[in-house]
Structures are given as C-alpha cells and as structure tokens.
Length: 435
Image 1 (cartoon, rainbow, N blue to C red):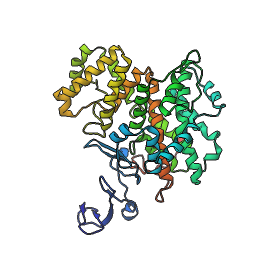
Image 2 (image 1 turned 90 degrees about the vertical axis):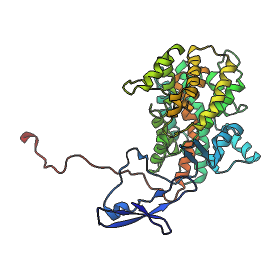
Image 3 (image 1 turned 120 degrees about the vertical axis):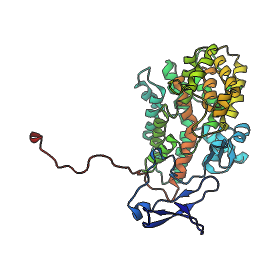
C-alpha cells in the first residue's frame, strides 16, 4: 500500500501480485493522524477490514477531544487540559464541550443556573431505589435509575428536536450527581439529601453525599476544588469504550437517557472505569511501605502475576497530562485533611520511588490520573465501590456532548460492525431420531 503523490491524497490497494488495484481516499483532520476512507472497500473488493478492538479504526468525525499519547497531550476543543483544570471549572468545560466555545460571563451564568435548577429528580424515583437490595453495588443502581429517567421526562426524548436535545443534555448533567449521591446514601442506609441551588456543582455533590440531618455540614473548599478538578480531568477522553458505546447505542435512535445508561454499563467494566479502584486494591496487597521494594521486584518479573496499577497508560506513552494536574491536588488534599492513613503513606512512598527509580523512568511508568484520583477519593472517605460512580458523574458531560455531535453528523449511520466468520460452513439438517 503506497501513498499517491497526487492531490487529493489517496492510497492504492493491490489485491495480490499484479492484481486489481483500488484507490482509497485519505482524509485529513485539523491535527493528528490522517485516515484511509474505506467506506467503498467492501463494494469494490468484497472484503472487510479486520481490527479487533478498533484500535486502528476511526469510527467517526469529532471536534471535541484530541489526544496525542506519545507527547502527553489532551485538549478539549483546542484548549489544553492543564489550562482548563487550572483556570476553568467543570460547568464551563461542560458548556465548551456542548457549544464549541467558552461561554461569556452572561452565558456562563445562564448555563450554571439552568444546571442548578435541573438537579432535583422526580420524587417517585426514590421508589426505584427501594427496589434494590441494601448491599447493591452503586453502579448497578446507576444503570437502572439513569435508564429509568426516560420514563419520567417524555418531553425531552425526541432526538430530532434540537430544543429537546438541549433540555435532555442539561438534565443529564444536572441529575447524574443527584442520582449518584442517592446511590451512595442508599448503600449507607442514610436519608437522601436534596440538592441546593446555592452551592456550585462540586460543592452540591459533596453536600448530597456527606451531609446528614443530625448536624450541619460545611463543604471543605479544598475538597470541593479537588472534586471539581477530578470532574474536569475525567469529562471526556475521545472514543474510549464507554463513549463508543454511547455513540453505538445512539446510532440506533435510542433516547439519550438509554444511551447514557449504556455508557454507564460499559464504564463499570474493570478494564475501563475500575482502574482507580484497582490502585487501592494493589496498595492493600502491598500492605506496608516496607514491602514496596519486594513488590516492585515482582512487577519487573514477567512470570509473576502481580501488576502495578496506576502507573503508565495505554494511550499516554509519556506522562499522563491529567496526572500532572491531579498530583498537586492530591498533595493539597492530604495536607489539608492531615490524614494519617498507612495506605496513603504507602502510596506517597510508591509515587516517590516511581519518579526516581530508573526502571520506572526507562519504562515510562509514571503515575497516571487513576493513581492520584484513587488516593484523593479514599482521603475523602468515599468507598471504592463509589469510585466508578464518580467517574460516571464526570464522564456524563463527555457522553452527552459526543451524543449530540453524533446526532447532528450528516454522515452518521447506525453502527454495524462486521466479522470474520470462522464457524461451520453449510450443513444439512438431520432429524433428531437419525442423529
């Protein structure tokens, strides 16, 4: 396969030595790798492409998020994640992802107010929670109640109406934190807290999670700032498994609440949304900072099943840019809380070793965002079962933006991957008494 020197760019595919040739167009984005347009490949050659996991397949056109894993770059609508985390807040990022531009002061106020006034959920939804076992996993609850939103908000399920799409998008961004906090409270056997319009997005979430009727609760501003940064850093991450799931579900014309519920189900998988929980499990396995050297040696041994979670990243072959931001936040939270937790002390010791040890440096096994977010959430007293729920709260904004982009894309078709069939060829049916 060779690039054509003429414009527009093409690649030429030859079927066997001296066989028929077909030219395929090459499409360029504004930044990043170009793609070979194979939409006419099957019709011209009677062949599909084969790409398990779609790791080399561009499934859509998107202007939301750009990742350069080799150089540790993450941008939303052209803005570096480091700048957004330092200078913005989560709802401003939500506006940026949905609308394409940063809001003016007036637009920001209007958007924030719209989200604040959509945070309450229908009172009958509390009945749904009572149907779950008291020890149900919070993600199991989230899958159910988010999908059930479509049964309550019929006025925002027409995907062809831009006003209804806007209302549904804002409802989801507003109500997911409320439902997440309700799932947490349900697991504790505590009463639900109603949202408060006087608090910002992160403050409101922490209040709904940790306030109790017996006493006043004042949100720690350092924890609220940390929560906001965690939300920003997890808002969108290009076409990952859960985002692709939302797009695939949405391509059938499913309502937005069902699509986001599908994304939550995909995120629940331990290979996707459970990475920060795996970090805490790993720290528990190590047990004490005196054991770090032994476990690092085990991690170097390919025959040993032990793995270091929270170091390195499938996408980022250099430092995870989100980890740079969250590392500082992590230390601020631990200092502010004065937490004396052997597990967190172990984590800080492991971080120090990873940043200095030549093995980690050579392998580029730098602490990633999951390493720091897991430590922060533990310091805040969230149980590990809530970690993926918090991920879902943040990622809902990205899912909603991706869903909106997909719906308005004129090239969008229902998702229909193909396969390489390896089962039996035609067989004659034999009646049961003759087998």
